[in-house]
Length: 86
Image (cartoon, rainbow, N blue to C red; front, side, top):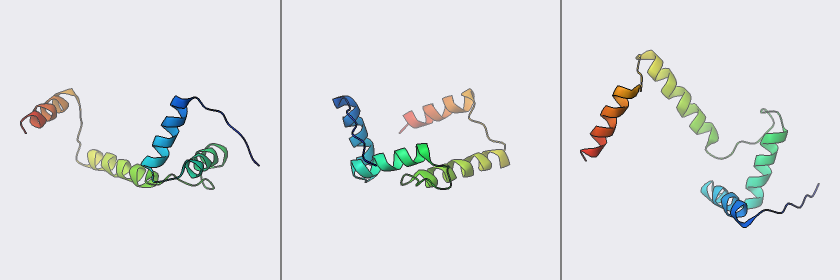
């Protein structure tokens, strides 16, 4: 099926930027986005890096649970101050 879409310049620029950030041509990026929206997860192609990011987040959450870590406000504030030292 062929579909023609008309976007504003701002939308087009955003889509092009997202495609380039993933190392994809715009058409390939849009094809993947539409497939993700229309197909069940098992059949849809993943965007490059998406699975890796999701796995990294799962591992970080598991690590935090295992060692009873929290990024509550006091810790976040300390980390911000630590970052300003360098």
